[in-house]
Length: 64
Image (cartoon, rainbow, N blue to C red; front, side, top):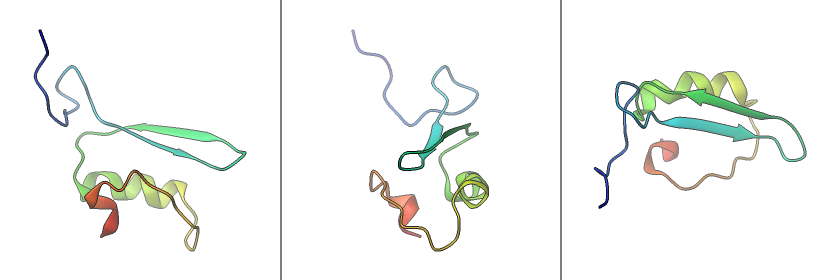
């Protein structure tokens, strides 16, 4: 039987994880409270240098 599908929250059993990896470099993982733009933006700004070329899984919140 399949479990409940969805994006998850930090309060649920499947909290969202944001991961960034530098090509040939380090991996950074962040356990996020939610998957809304205001929740992940600080992690992105702290991890990715302005002007970098970024490849994503095309999740819609990255486009903003």
